[in-house]
Amino acid sequence: MDAKALTTLELPKVLERVAAHTAFSAGRELALNLYPTADVPEALLRQQETREARTLLSRTPDIDVGEARDVRPVVEHAARGAVLLPTDCLDIKSTLVAARRLKRKLTPLGAQFPRLAFVAEGLEDVPGVVENISTTLDERGEVLDSASARLKNVRRDLRETHDRLQQKLQSLIENPRNLKYLQDPIITQRGDSYVIPIKSNFKGRIPGIVHDQSSSRATLFIEPLATVDINNRLRELKLSEEDEIRRIMTVISGQIGASADPIMASVEALAQLDVGFA
Image (tube, rainbow, N blue to C red; front, side):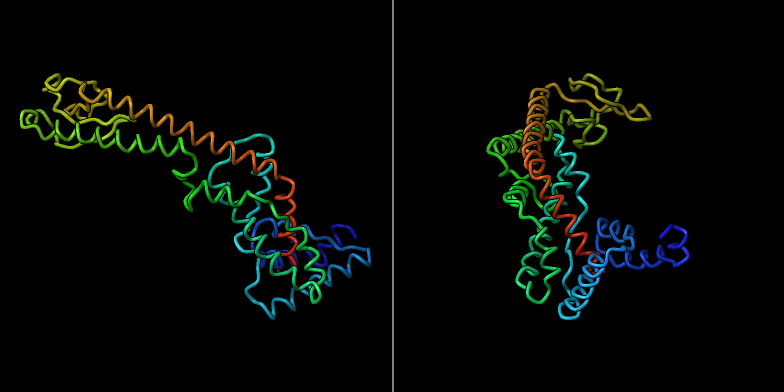
């Protein structure tokens, strides 16, 4: 059947209506690419799948593909050695959790819904990946302190150094001798340095490094010499934190890349079930 005949029969409109009921992008893509088959056994399988899905939904209306995402592109990147973003890893986790949950629901129903149970067999279990992501990232995608002993120690040192720096700066701006030099008795940031604002006509009264000035040029933002070493230590610790986070994400991405095939198979099975439910 040629494209003109399918358009005349309004198949694209039918597929759009089906796709509108899918739950995630991989299912939508599969629905939009459905094509009539001349193979009778294949056609009967498709009808059986739809019939089983309709019956199952009438009995269990809340069954679906959960928080599945089409993670195939990022999984391919991981398989090529790319380091994934935490948000990508969370999407992979939610997809694998959805696959695991749906497989547990459908597998015991094989006698009643053999076609759906067969498709659910393609929902691969990927040992360790969900658990490793869960013990590495929180729900916002932040790397947990407990992800490694080194990260825990670096972050502890970061907090202590940050507190020491704030205390030192606070003592400077609260010192009565310095109040007349300050534009405001506050601590602020310029770049990755903590600074205090002084009146430009008092430049040098509080020795330090000028990092910025206000648009009116009335205020200079200086890093007091008394805090330079602490600021430098803080920057070093932040770099160490970034390095350790990258190392941790490299390990997680490597695990995902090594499991690329079963993850991709699970997405494709989820898409097929999504279309059946649609």
